[in-house]
Picture 1 (cartoon, rainbow, N blue to C red):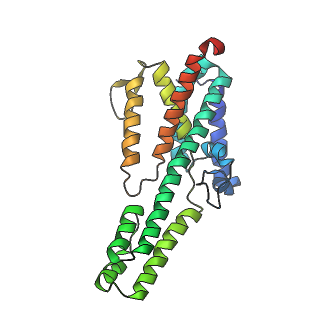
Picture 2 (tube, rainbow, N blue to C red; picture 1 turned 180 degrees about the vertical axis):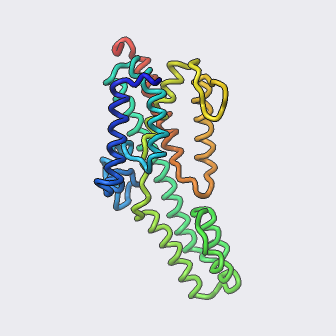
Picture 3 (cartoon, rainbow, N blue to C red; picture 1 turned 90 degrees about the vertical axis):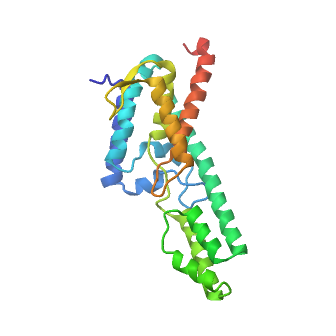
Length: 264
């Protein structure tokens, strides 16, 4: 059985209560508390803190809380309750900040692609815009073919420009564009656990053999980096928030380690 320490238990309870509130009591909480891109009409500064207590569904919550239960207790026993909670919150907020940077770069690149299309509104450019910027999109191909066959048709060009502008505007203004979940904070815990207890043997489903924590953390990092760079259609996981949590966890642990004479 898991030895659930007080702060781990309180975080677990808080996250469950927030999901209950999202689903039944305060459904607007998801929109108000999720982390939206800076510049979105749905962005509020407090979202850097609140997003880590919200989840999409019970499966999302279960996976994050299972990780908290697995990696959290030993760290809380080593650091104490206050420092463990501080670490969890710093990793969560830091992951959100780094994710905002990556998301901001993606949105800037989207805006640049929109402007470039307006400068050269051709059928191939129209198709290329959606293939590169919105790989999940569909239905744009007939207009792209029509523009390629009749490149001077002003109605086709105007329709394509409206569609491109709408796709970009909808991305900025979508109420479903927020990020939520405790994964950023959890990946900070994974790094700290692997750093402080590197040879602890862990079982990872579906592998029937134990894996040392240091190899588990390395494998997770490489997987998240690959999936973040090579995004596939339909992937809505914030991989760079996970990597952000790992990076912030590394920075905090090394800082504390450097000042352990003061802290311990």
